[in-house]
Amino acid sequence: MEHYKYFQNRECEYFPCHKTDDPDNFNCLFCYCPLYHLGDKCGGNFTYTSKGVKSCINCMRPHLKENYDLIKETLVKNQ
Image (cartoon, rainbow, N blue to C red):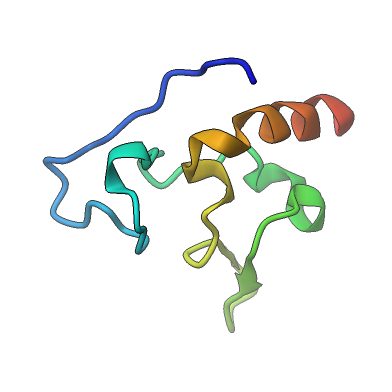
């Protein structure tokens, strides 16, 4: 596994916005997911709101370091 820098915005009143058992290894993306633009191909746990907006609030995939290589592979595969 390659090592990528991860971010934690602990000053944010919502941090961590997702429930996690390991907050020290939690990547805070400031509400941005690098896979969001892939729509249904992102591979994450998402739903669509009643207004048709993709909601990723239940997805932990981009927030955990062990998934970084998988995210990179997904991005390369879907270029």
